[in-house]
Each structure stands twice: as C-alpha cells, then as structure tokens.
Image (cartoon, rainbow, N blue to C red; front, side):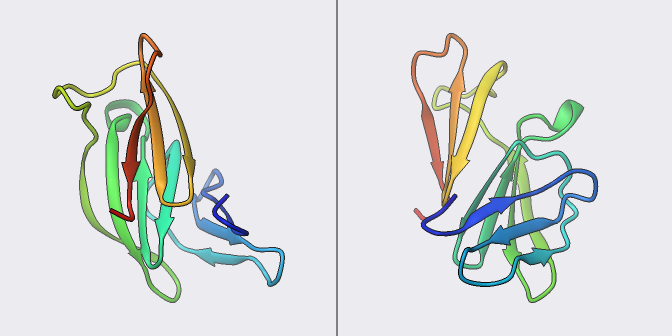
Length: 113
C-alpha cells in the first residue's frame, strides 16, 4: 500500500496491478516472475526476489502505458557485501524492507532516493 494505492504482482502471469479506491484497477504487463516485494515511485518500479537462483534479484523498470519495461537487473546485497540469505521481506510504497538472519535489524531499499 502506498498512500491510497495498493500494488501487487499476482501469480501466474505476474502483472503489476495498482488498486485505488477512487478509480478502476490499472494493470501493466510484466516479465519479472516470482518477486516477493514491489516498490513503486512515480513511473519507476523495483521488484525484489524470484525463484531459485533469482531469490536475491533486484529488477528496476519503468511504467509505460501498458507494461513494465525492465531497465536493469542485479542482486541485492547487505551493507557488508553478501546477499541476505535467509530473510524476511515486506514492501510499502517506494521502499523494500529486508530483515536477514538473525532477524535483529531491518535494511531498507528506497526507490525514491
């Protein structure tokens, strides 16, 4: 949820969906599969996670009229260098929050900065 909008990437085709109380639902075609979190800021979007070896993938894209155009794909790493490994993930608005084992602190990826 971001302000008054909720964003989702539902299984099986993983479209990006925006739901607002004041208008119809909007849908964008999306090629990023299996993301565990999505962050949106203006026309920019980031997806975190995926299946198998893509579990730490961070994909950046831009919204067009009908689809999400992927611009960059990389790996999310912790401040000290490695990928998070076992973790908890939530997102809201422009932020993706990651809490890696031993689950004592949250890291934040902010698409707006």
